[in-house]
Length: 102
Image (tube, rainbow, N blue to C red; front, side):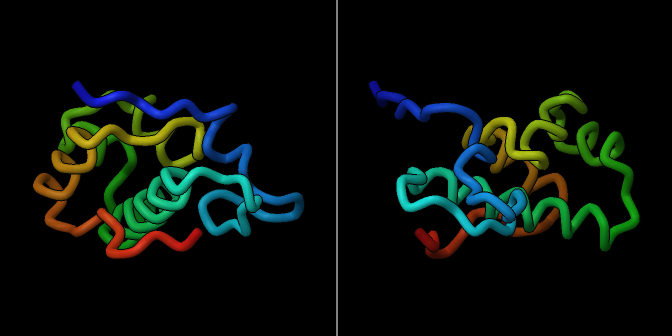
């Protein structure tokens, strides 16, 4: 069984002072999962904005709670793999990063 990694605090807590989620810059001690989460969040927010879809409509289409979408977009939490796959299929957009940028 896969073991979950532990992260101290929210993903957005790894943004350096003066930076912002999901753009960064990120602290040197940020787990690689933070970089993946930031890229997924950035791509998802961009797609929602460019498609003139509301966040509520996007969450419904993906099949997740509105609060889950808001948490992912704001860096409160990382999306699980099921959420990423569901979003990619429901929205027709690739969200998974090709290469993380630690």
